[in-house]
Length: 426
Ligand SMILES: [Mn+2]
Image (cartoon, rainbow, N blue to C red; front, side, top):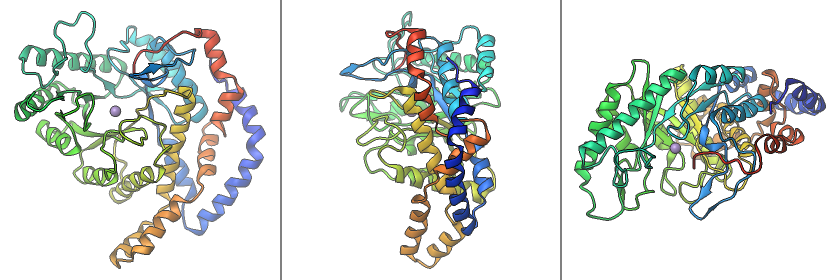
């Protein structure tokens, strides 16, 4: 199943008139505010977000998994699913692989397939939170932090192997997320665990090719319930600084305790020039992995406010790795990813509308009311027409979700792959 250009063209023809009307209204509003609409559109076109290979099937909770049918069961099928999303949205030009859920066998053939969809291979992800078949030692009590040196060595070797796979595919970064920690007080020595993780990460960092980066992801709890060795951004930063210049912090929006001011964390890491990338999702309680923008769109906007402020003050785009990290328990994963992409781009576009000079002078004058008004004026602007225009200019669909449904995409995938096909991963 591929989304052919001709069905996108037919869809766009039906929608073009009402789109033109809405875009011209928004365009004239933006002009009055001295916003360069063409620059916003170009930034949106350049903004590509990676889809993780594990987000294309139905996710599960520990209580159950409800398959949707037609799930991709091979890496080729996963690349084809990202191809569908990218053809419709023109904003998902990369796939992020998880090893060993997706072991690339014929890398040249995979690269060729991905190229037919205009998809690149983004960050590769290692996994030392589960045991695999034929693995010598268990990670039940940790991996890079383990008290037993043999297990630490096995976990380091796994990360180096993941880097090798990444090199073969053209990736230039690896994300390390550790489940390492303790579920009970007294179970582990905090200081020894952290020292072990630091030394292990230093070893992985030392083996990185010169143009590679290592992202260190943090999480406050789960799967360990008492302590995690890398619970927060501060520990991630400490470890990244302890490794060297190719080690960076990674912010997963769901990896914070409720009410954490994530935008402030983003600002601090940007200031320290150690923010490496993002995992986008949304949540109400913890690591819920819900559709981006479904619960707290204002927080996402405030995060993009910090990112755009940094881009505008430094004049250069920070080379951040952008990825969606979500799980889909109820919705069709492809529909959910299309909604997430839209949520991210809405927040980004709104943040580009903020008048920074006015905001700065309001801050200088301690005019708190006006500060809020400037932010909320941007947040309450309906930017969807400009996002549609960015898609239209690059050959995407004016309404990707509508076309996904009109084209009976899921039904076609079920016909091709069967009702019972199940994707590997979460
Ligand atoms: Mn993540």
